[in-house]
Image 1 (tube, helix red, strand yellow):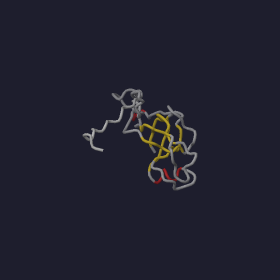
Image 2 (cartoon, one colour):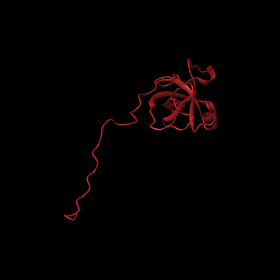
Image 3 (cartoon, rainbow, N blue to C red):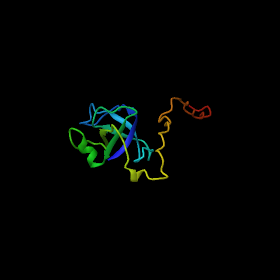
Image 4 (cartoon, rainbow, N blue to C red):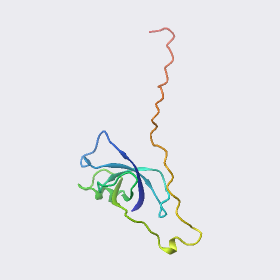
Length: 127
């Protein structure tokens, strides 16, 4: 299991059998100090309760396929819990480590700006 912060939602245009009604969420994986670790990814929300900004934990691979009902649906990552509190033992926060860095705002994954399609060169008067 790994920590993650929900950073958005995904609305699929088509879903596989067994995934109808299962929310798909963009999450940012985090390390034990809640610092971003890796690229954002999409998780199926097995709890059906997580929302943007929440701290969750997720599983991957076979465990993700088993986390949803019905079992063995085609998912790579699944949220299996929402974290209420987070604390580290004293030996994990030893001297010199300080407080974990706050989460930096993430850049949007999709730009709202559109660019015109490049025009094809003319055919020199031929039809």
